[in-house]
Image (cartoon, rainbow, N blue to C red):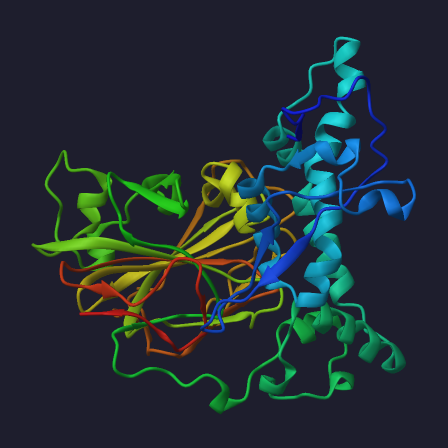
Length: 423
């Protein structure tokens, strides 16, 4: 929404020809070297097409108009590009702003005049065949690039998303035969030291979207937007399989997951941007006893999209690993996204994601506990667990004592091996 208002003194007699508007944008950096932000000048100036002498001293009649932008909403939209490098951010901020504010209204207004009722942005976005596009993108990623083309293509990706190739185990770009190998590149062993002082570490590189206690069987995907805990994890698994006590009848789904008296249920959401390290690891010492695969949509999990699609994580394809750790219930969920139909779990060879057809609302269960294996899959803290094909989201939901504390701030960048929280 753009509003123009007139100065109170000396109102102009007639309409005005506003030919060119200059909006001054400056980038501010916090003192501690944190993330940069945009600040809009409170009174943007309007350039006059007349001679230069008329611009000095006394403002002309065009400068009596001032332009007001919805600053907060605009900053949020620009903040969605924080995963990009600064040159890319500067180049892409204005086109995206124009598209977001003008196209939905300018393109649909003529249609509404003839009686057509437009769909909401959410319904329109959900109608996009994201699964088909993701499979096509996966096929494209497997195409081997000529040696002479690899460096220009990968360099463009590195420049756009700010990839740090100095951390890669192999820095030579000619080594990666296709985009898929480049996305799944390994890191040098010393690039991500694992914190041994805290009980729970970050399973991946990314951005902290939300964390805290689970309340009223609802989990926040971003600030103010929630989803149902039961819809996300699915029906509770049998207590025999997870070695949990039988919950009293009538308890809520959240209470059924808490296995020890005095414990609480906690959650943490980590968003992996396209430029981040794409593998994920075990966040603690725990035992994986069950896998549940939900086929579903592959909508973008970008924080901006997550703000206006309720229960986005429940709509998207995801792989839920459940088990237990020393304090009770523990789960790690890998959520798929656009162009991230491929979710791979290293110890689960039977898992196949982004199938051409699926039943909406269905899920597939697989137990790692059998007659030959009574303990499931034991995972050590920091051990390789799986990988995405591009960027996506990791959701941790676990039980812990009431004195468990997170060492995080919402919106902060985090790397694999750094502390999430401890007792």
